[in-house]
Structure formats: C-alpha cells, structure tokens
Length: 424
Image (cartoon, rainbow, N blue to C red):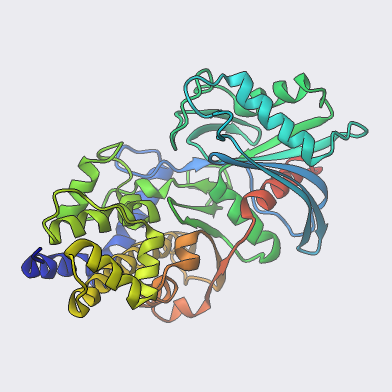
C-alpha cells in the first residue's frame, strides 16, 4: 500500500501556524469578544453571562454538588474551609447507561432521569433530612442562563435525547425530583457551566485568576468581565469559545466539518479539541495511505504514538501491511503537527482575552485555570501553549502561570452555592 509523500508535505505545511497567524488569531478573537459583549451580529462568540462573580477564598460551609456533563454523573459533599482551602467529604459517581438501563436515550423520560439524579444526591448525603443543605449544580450542556439558579436547556448534545427537558429550567426539574424522593431539605441554589466551575475553583485558591478553560474532548474558555462599559454585568462570561469562526481552516478541516454532526459550527473546537483531533488524524491517515475504510484513532492513541515509537510502528504495520521506520516517524510528526497547532490556536484565544482584560495597559501577572485531558496528557501541548503566549505577548507572558485544576466541576459547584447563599 503506497504512502502519498506529496500529500504528506502539503498536510504538514498547512498544519504549521506561524507567529503571524497566531498574532492575527489573537487580534480577531479579541475583536469577536468585544463585539459579542456589545451583542452585535459580527461576533461568533455567544458571550453568555453566568450571573456569578469570583469568590474571595474565604467562603465557608458544607455544600452539596451535582456534576452532570455526560453519561457519568457525580454527586459530592464538599466542605469549604476558608483561607482558600476545601475538602471533599463524600462522592458518589454513577453511569446513566448500563446493561440494565439507559437514561439518556429517547425512550427514557424526564422523570426517570431526574429521579435518578435525585437518588444519587440522596446517596451522597446518606439521605440526611435533618437540616437544610444547599446544592450547586455544574450542568455542561448548552443552556440559556437567566439567573444564578435558572438555566434552560437549549438543546441536548453528547448523544442525549431524553424528551421533555429541552427548554426547561434544569434546577426546577431537579428540585421537583428531590421533593419526590423525600429530600425537600436539599435546595438547589446555583447552576453553572463546567468552564465557569474551573475558574471558580482556581480563583478560590489563586485570587489573581481571571481566565478558565476546558481543554479536553471539547474546548471552551470563560473569563471574569469587569469592564463598566462592556454592555454585560460584572460577572464571569462563558464565551463558548469553541464556536470562534475567524480562523482559516485547511481543506481537511473543511472536509471534517462537512461530515460532522453540525456543519458550519464550532470552528475552533474542531481544530483544537481532543475529539476532533482524533477524527482528523484518522481522516488524514486514510488519505495518505489511500485506504478504502477510514481507521479510528483517538487523541489518546495520538498521545501514545508520540510517546512511544513502538506504537507508531504498530500503526504503520496495521495500515501499510509492514513496519517501516521512516513512515513511523512521519506518523509521529503528523501527530505532533496536530497537537502543536491545537496548542498555538488555544494560546492565541487566551492572549486575545488577556488583551481585553488589560485594556490599554499591560497584561498583569496571573494564573490561568485549565482542566482537561488534552492539556494534562498530550505531549507537546503545555510547552507550546507557553511558547505561543511568549510569541504573542512578549515579556508580559512571563507573569502567566497556567494551573491544572482537578475536581473543578464539583468544587466549583460548591463555591457557586456558597457565593449564591452568602449574605450580600
């Protein structure tokens, strides 16, 4: 089976984004951000207000949390200790899909889904009904947020198809389910996006944090908006940055987009996230080796190929019928090119956001909160994020310190509950 050397050279060249490209991407992102704040039709960013600001780090108390962003759901009891400290007392994690039941399909009912969520919460608190307990909810689906405790699901994603939920107030449904299982003492008081939860968690421990990002299977960034003339309240803004469209895609990005579930949408996410990097890598291999059937490789596979030459040998043998050192190295280089492009584009959007926060001044020293498997595990990503930030921001990048946030969805929900219930 032949390998198309000319096509390979074209692909590597198209995936290589230089300083001029990322500088322009950063400027375009800032422009889109600021147009989105003004609610003009020119922006590709949704700029959704979260109706919550940053914590002080002194919030205290015991709170319940629900992390509902996919088929695995977690409920936890978290104690905020003040002085930027917290502890996770109990956590219950269950899947909505097993061999016995499927609570995400079109045959499940709204009552079954939220009744199951209520029971998970009940297990986390051991069905304690002796005192009022406040609950923060991280809900990672596209929603129209109307207040800190009211978010209406716009449209299911991630293979969810449960009828009767779209358009509904999610925490109202959860409250009804809690009452139905005898947990009237549990009061949902806040609902937030997972990206917002990551920023809240980081800011609790690192008060200078203003920007939070999910860099995993999907991608999104939020930041704390404080500009008095921005046209939005002073609160964390969920940009839904995966939808940023002012980038020049390669022909292969265009092919991937045309074949995706939502053509024409989520341009940035389709160029940087783990899910789409794996799909694009598989598509490119099919074309390079002239395969009649596209292989299926994930971002996890890409990381293994970059980490281990033997894994690359095995892939070449699978695709080519025999091992080949030169082809193996080319496969590894293709993975590196995709990973480095991803990190440079993500860094450009962060730089554009930091420029907005700085206004006409300098970008201040601060932490950047990040959660996600791509940032944590994929080779070449962390160092190339920083390299790109230096290329765009110069010496001002020296004051930036990315921090990996774990358990952000749960801890952030607890912080949101604390902020929502503390005396103003």
